[in-house]
Image 1 (cartoon, rainbow, N blue to C red):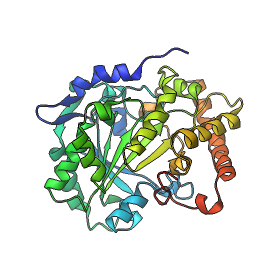
Image 2 (image 1 turned 90 degrees about the horizontal axis):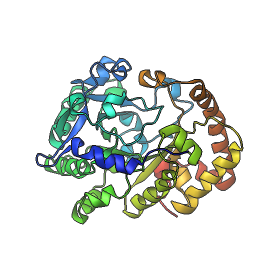
Image 3 (image 1 turned 45 degrees about the vertical axis):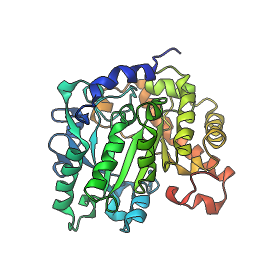
Image 4 (image 1 turned 30 degrees about the vertical axis):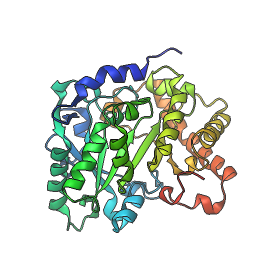
Length: 346
C-alpha cells in the first residue's frame, strides 16, 4: 500500500480555498451537481447552502448519530432536541482526502474557484439568519434552524473560518442563540495551531456553543487506505490530532464509518481500534463516537465497484461488533449515556 500525503495536498489546496485579505473562504456551488439531485427544495438555498436533517423518520430506531448534535445543541440553547434535528451549512470547497463513499461531487472538493464562491463568515451567517427566520415558527420542526454547521470539504485546511464565525456571532450578539458544529477529517496535522494564533484559539475555546465533530476514516491502516487512497501511515495521525483537539479544550465528538472490504479478523481489528482510542485519545472516546452506516447518494453511486459494494454489506456486521465490544468495556449506565453526557476525558 502506497498512497499520497494528505497533509502535503492540503498545503497545495489551501491558497485557493481562502482569501485572507478579505477574510473569505471558498464554498462549493452545488447547482448542477449530482449532490443537488439528492436535495429537496426546502433544503437547498442559493445554490450553495443547504439544511441537513440528521435523524430522518426511517432512522429513528437505528439512531445512527446517537442524538448528536441535537442533544448537545438542545441542552446549550434550552430548546427541545427535535428543534435541533436540522443544521444549516455551506461546504468548504477543497478536501485533502478522496473518500470513495463521500456524498460530495469531486469538483466540489477540488478547491477550484470555478466551482465555488468566496464567502465571509458574516455573509454565511446572514444567509443562515434569512432561512432561520423563515421557518422559526414552522410546525415542521425539521425546518427550524438552531445549528450552524461549518462543513466541507475539509474545514481544518482553513481553520480561520472557525474564529471568523465565532467573531461574527459575537458581533451580532447571537452567541447564546446559535450552536456551531464544525467538521474535521483528522488529517490536517498542525494546521489548527500553524494558522491560528494563541489568542484566536482561546476565543474558539471560550465560545460555549461550539462542538467539533471529527471523523476517523477507517479502523486500521488497511481500511483507511481503502477508503481514502492516502498513505496508510496517516491512519495513526488521526489519533494524535483527535487527542490534541481535546487537549486544546474543545468539545470533541467523533464518527467512524466502519466499511471494510475484508472481514478477516474483523472483531480483533475493531477491538484493537477501540482500545487504541481509549489509550491514545481518551478512556471515554468510544462512547463519544457514532458508527452510522454509509448511505449511497448520487456522487457515491458513480464510484461503486464490486469491492466497495461488498464493503457496504460488511459495515452492518462491523457495526454489530462495535456495539458488542462497547459492552465488554463499559457499564450499562455508561452505555446508556448520550455522547454529550459522557465526559470528554476521564
